[in-house]
Length: 518
Image (cartoon, rainbow, N blue to C red; front, side):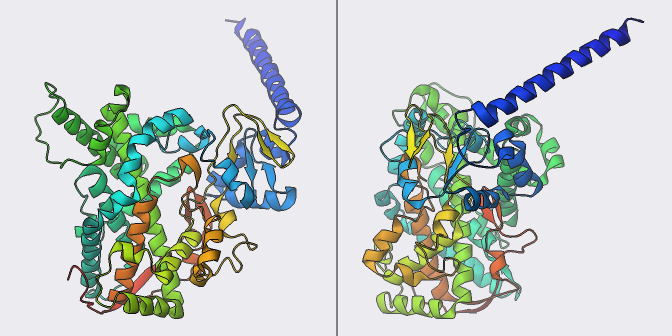
């Protein structure tokens, strides 16, 4: 074996030379030859993805704030990675997030949550259109308005839980309560049966921890998507050992798959994969997809379960964050809360207004819009690319296929559009003409052909909850400051500073308004 050491040394030397040569060539290409080399930005960001990894994983969600620094230094368009650009110019938003021009997503974004077969996870715009089309009517404003009795029943359950909590004389974590409400709504609507989180006297705080764990894992490992896939392959006990909060995610995915098989089994003559009896009503999102003109390969249980899982995870969490942020700002600004209650007392004295009537109340809807502006439930950039056409930004030609991101926080905190942007000022929306102008720059749900599908549902949930809860209850904040709602970390969703206890309140009084549902 005497020959081993010289041969091994030669192999190691050769590999080292190859590695150094490849690394040098890659650096030269990315910094000087790449089609993106002309764009301004930090050289280290252009050189390696480890730059982003450092800010998002080691510093926990700080890359968005570093991008803001880049714009201050380099201007409105910057290169933020070897492959990606970012633009901070409100007037360009409608171009990037176009309604009529094809836009692909970036795998860097869609690969975060292990649902590549969902509409959210679809990179290609053609595949997205196929998957999205049968879902659109299910979330139309007309369809959501017909959902009002169920929404009101859920709000009443939420109020019942808050009344019961009052007797404890302990602080209530409002995000837990609102997340139970919004999740029960979207699950009931999409699956035909509720998770019954509102029936739990504690408002199922574990689900809130689970949602937080999903986004944190997605952000920290988005450059290593195989790790997310590994979680899918491991047994549940092993995943829970690694991260206990991920366990319920697996359970929910398994349940979605079970329900998908049940519905397909019941709808397909001669197909019997299970002896379980189907108890779900007709008219669920499952049924809408199964009865659609989707190609047969798009109707398999695994894909349908991914679709519903993403709807549930996104539909509950973002609206819950909005309601939580609104709670803080209304309780921190008694004059705003008083004005809201005055409008409700004047326009809805008996508490019997319909959702359509709520949609026309000036101050109530202004409170909702200002809450959407400040919450930034999705804090990260949402990349889009033009698949085969050059996109022009001023004098800059952006090559086809290049992911370009914009960030809602930058839009919503632009002082030229929203003066005193850090402050909660519903009055800025009260003038109808000014509201039309400002709504152009309100991008809480993104825009274009790939904007959030659940806008009508989210707005209905917010209006009904605000109009009911802040009339029914007297509350005061408990050891909560603006730092508990101000976004300090971009973990896909906006998170406050580390260690924040969230928005907590003491329930002081139930007003017992004799409104609908009493």
